Image (cartoon, rainbow, N blue to C red; front, side, top):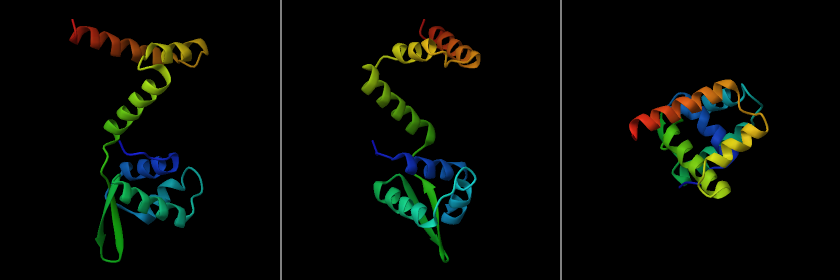
Length: 124
């Protein structure tokens, strides 16, 4: 699995929003949340190209970037990795921890119930 830093993930999120996309469009999207320096973003883009997380095409005088990682599959792998590292592959202690600190909203609980009900129906 490709290792992606927090900053690289934020850039990747901006690319996932709409692609192919230019560095300037990525910077514009990122700056909606917090200020980013142009050079920083361009350095991160170059790093991510080298890692194989994104690709680019040259169009006239600019580069257009596209993700090579699909958002859903990347977040699933990262989630599984986190659960494996911190909870020995068990999800229940993670959810229980959130429940104990009252960080589960009613919406979260309803969604979890739906996921469990669907799983039980499909795996009966």
